[in-house]
Length: 292
Image (cartoon, rainbow, N blue to C red; front, side, top):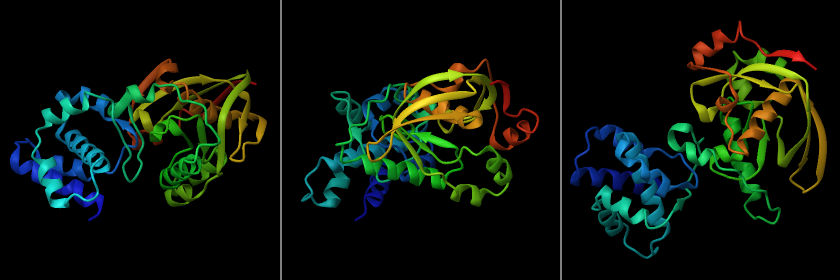
């Protein structure tokens, strides 16, 4: 039986023995395949204020954790019955003994709603002996190919390592393709910056930035026009490169993530705006170079 089916069955069985206000949302939560290496202990701290949907996600994470740490010889029906009979408060007490982590099947971006504290941690340097490194890159690439983003830092997908994946920093191409969503998703520069370090900055630009991790929060941010950066590629070869203009803005934004800094922290003005409204807003509030 696939782990997704097990999570769903645990959710359904749980609902037979416990009262949840919105059962449909709860079941949807058990189907949700997001979160990677999310700290369940931290997630459990806010369980009193969770929506039913978030409780469903929480139950899914619990299922994955116990499945991972349970004997594979156990009868799957007994496993489902045992797990679904435990009250949520009991789950909480079990998890508070230690800070457990779970690695589910797929990855999705971590947001300030799901785990802001996690996003604000400082990412650790990549060890090139880490056997998971190629897997990290594959996860970043897979996410960026499916989503319409400029770039992403590893921490946003639950990988607290100093890695930036660049999908598209070509502003002209972005402008040309923004109304052709499928083409934009397929295009990718396939650049990976490992253990990057900004050496120099100069000039000034302004832009209303958005971020997958910050949901609909839009911030007016000033950044350098030019940055000089040292970084390593996948083969542990060191590079030194200068980035200018829009490209520098994107890379500086992602670089901040590696130190737990969000664009809303640096913004002098913020707005809450959905994607449709942002599209119209950007027609009159474009990327602007103040000085080079």
